Image (cartoon, rainbow, N blue to C red; front, side, top):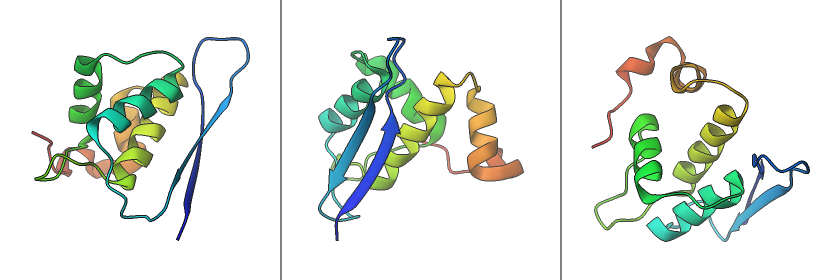
Length: 109
């Protein structure tokens, strides 16, 4: 099965471009480098490792025991970056994603 996701590049450039990410299967494993590159594509500029680490912690994206991420992690990060670009706070995003129980979500290490 092919998975297609589309996110709007949220850079400050005058013309936003769409970033499309394709995968062969919904259980595709994403490397930390790929996750960071994806964030850079959506943001329209490089993302520092520390910044990505902070975002991951805030929204609960955590690598598996082998150090890989899932397509669901990628989707969540993309939605988060779009929310930040739209001016929403992390709390607003988490409430949107998890409802009023955002504080009950599993914490990321």
